[in-house]
Length: 124
Image 1 (cartoon, helix red, strand yellow):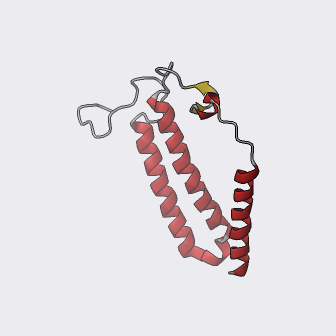
Image 2 (image 1 turned 180 degrees about the vertical axis):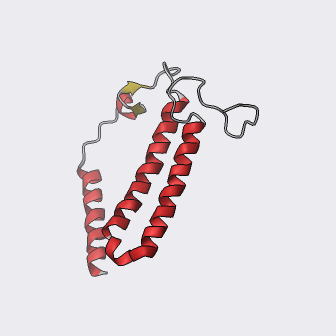
Image 3 (image 1 turned 45 degrees about the vertical axis):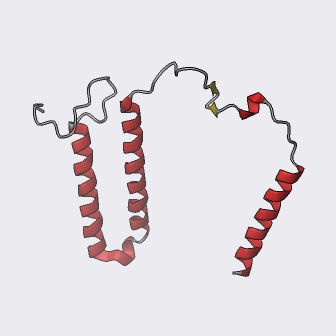
């Protein structure tokens, strides 16, 4: 507890010191919004397609699941057969989700290739 208090006190002191001693020269360029090196003036010039964001979200989802599988692999000896059954069920659920995304076209990059989820009129 004492160590945590010392850490918080040190961090707070260093932040205060940086703000107090830091150089302050406000300009219009410093106060303008900045994102990825592009000036945000007017309307955006290009839009990222929706499939870009979908693939990014799918990657995050399946990447986090890989962390769970890795932690199971480390504790494999202690978990025995019941642990193997649970991770097998977990992987089957992941595969079902992956095949569902694949069948709906969530991994396609072409515009208009993603079918609407829940659309019953499409044949696939």
